[in-house]
Every structure is written in structure tokens, then in C-alpha cells.
Length: 280
Image 1 (cartoon, helix red, strand yellow):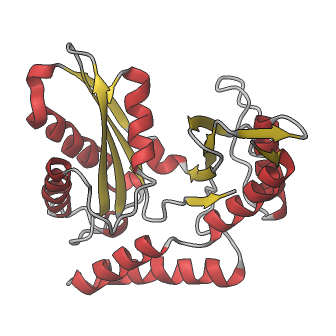
Image 2 (cartoon, rainbow, N blue to C red):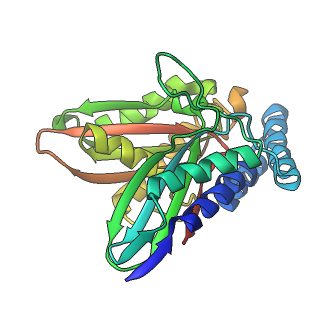
């Protein structure tokens, strides 16, 4: 049995939300540089150059890459041999978010009620997902998700007869509808399977996958490559100004589903999709 104080979790979350908002992940930066090399129009090249310069300034000056510093999604994966001590795990997570957003001078973007719209003034509560696994290891994944792209996400309940072709049509249609309004070049997470609830989780979890590692499922890897090429041919381009770089990455996650269902969710995300993973 491994004992872990929730105070360690608070400290780690506090540091992580600041890092995630101020330091672009290496795989995204590499993809932007690839886009810069592949662009032929001056406007598209200038926009990508500005995005990379913005990321460099954010990293150097410890300021957010974007004014929308997101609503924090936390995935806490821990072994069943772990015993948490010194308080509530969820309260510790929210305290970490609270401290990090205060100390990092990050914008408070969360309202307590969707109708009354009163800001909580500390960016809590976070959205927390717990995963219990064998052993005594702990892993934390955080995803401060901005809503410019989140608002362009979609979910549908297809019929099994719609098949793979229906899934692909829905993905492409969602990207087209998002257009310039979701801050391209995009990172797109796709969930297929589960139920109404689980398919949205799968789509968001897909955003945590590295962009420079191929999908381990050959069918999904082929779909990702083909759909990525089609999306980049749409001509939306960086920030909607046209060009070849509409997409930085598309990742698909699947899950078991009912014999009568084919749920699909597409979680749109922007060029600076902020996330961080670490052990505890």
C-alpha cells in the first residue's frame, strides 16, 4: 500500500496548469514548423510564423499563449493500492487549480451556473475523471480547454448502417462547419462508440494523444491519415486565411458500443491545445 498526501496533488496541479498554459508541447510546435515549411502563400506563412512567435514569447515571459486559459479537465489515473491521506482528493485538485490560476495570473473563465452566469473567480471547479487501475502508480493528465474551439464540437448518434462512411462524413462536416471560428490549424479528437456520455469522453481523451506517433490500430491509422489529407485540402488554412495547413493532427479513439448504436463525437481544439501529463 502506497500512501500519498493530497497536498502533493495540489502542488502538482498548481504548477501544471501554469505550464500547460504557457509552454506549447513539442509535438504541436513541430507540426506548426512543418506547416510553415509546406505553406506557399505569404499570408498563411505569416500567420504560422506569428503563432510560433507567440508561443516563444509565452514560454520566455511565462505568460499565457491565449487569453482563454480554459476550463480545466483533469484525468486522475491511480492504482488500487494507493491510499490518499490528508484530505479530499477532489478538493485537492480544485485547490491546485485555484492556486495555479491565481499565481499564474490566468484568466478566470468558469461560471458556477450556466443560466445565472456568476463567475467563480478562481476557475474552479475542474472537470475530473477518475480511473482506477492495478498497482500503486499515479498519473495525472490535465487539459485546460478553451471554448472557442469547444463551442464548435459536435456529437451524433448514427445508425450502425451508416457505417464507417457515415462516421467520416460527420467528421468532415464538423470541421467544415467550424471553419475559421475554431482557431485553426486544428487538432481534432474523435470518439466512436460507447454511449451518449462515453463517446464525448473518448473524443476529448483523443486530444491527449501525441501527434507524432501513429495510431496503434491500422484501420484507425489509415482513417486518420486519409481524413487529415482531406481536411488540409479544404483550404481553411491558418486562422481561416486560407492555405494548406488547416489541421495539425486528428486522433481517433474507439470503444465498445450497443448493437443498435454508432455514436460519434468530434471535439474541436485549436492550434495551441494545452495539455500536460505527469506521474505523481
